[in-house]
Length: 356
Image (cartoon, rainbow, N blue to C red; front, top):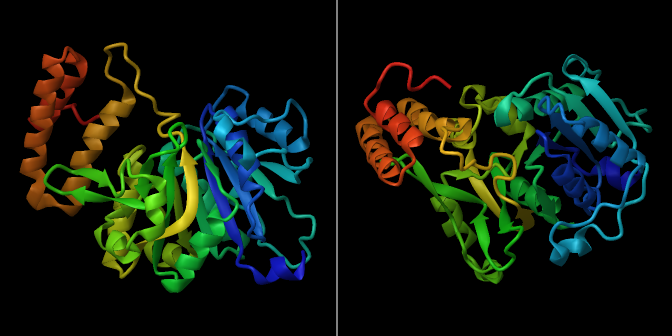
């Protein structure tokens, strides 16, 4: 390890993969071009069962075709492909959670660790496996949770850690998220603002032109930020010690908001690093099908709104139920009967409607 690497804070970059190897290897091609030294990438595979693990390991070994950008306008972020092989290891969940602490003699330590989680643990569960691995290594300063359906600019991580240090590592930091397939529009400036009466959030800076970030009032954005969007979220070792891991019983949606609320109760805030630019495909692994049947994604979206409200905004529970009831009527009118009926039953508190 070079002197520059040893002096830089150790960052573990955690990605969760579920049947998304094509996206994951494209993301990895850009991650390994980051200009910040001293990081390890941890890919947690949520029991994809489609050869994802083998494909990711083959990519690290330099086998297979060159990785191409799905959006040619972003080809510069992964062209030419980084030199291979990349030192990599494949672990089971048990091995990852019993791994030995890092030592100064780890000169041959892997730069990529792929973990088979053993099941589809959802967003929080998959990320928590990677976080626990990082904690056991004992040298972690930060964990960067990064969606596998993203690509990043070389300075994305450096900007995040700089903002975290400026905030005394008390909180979580988000990036400038740009739509991968629409480069003239932002998904968000770091995070989103919650509307408790609806249990719905509005991404800050949504659809704004990316150039507006240059003149943005960062403090104003941070004052409105209820949580950092999980597509790119940096947390410190201090945050993890004081707040703990993400709550896993949501499975999908509201985990980041729950985490932020728990953090704020302990004096941690939500911060924004404008210079950290991440391009996000948005929902690549959770696309809603159009078969007319109720999907698990839709069920979690409704159920977790009530679960979160019950925990943090009980005074708004009646309003949120009313909102879901109205949404159920609208879905029925549009012909989405399965979704509409589920929402109506959930709003009315029918037995079994919250089972996911």
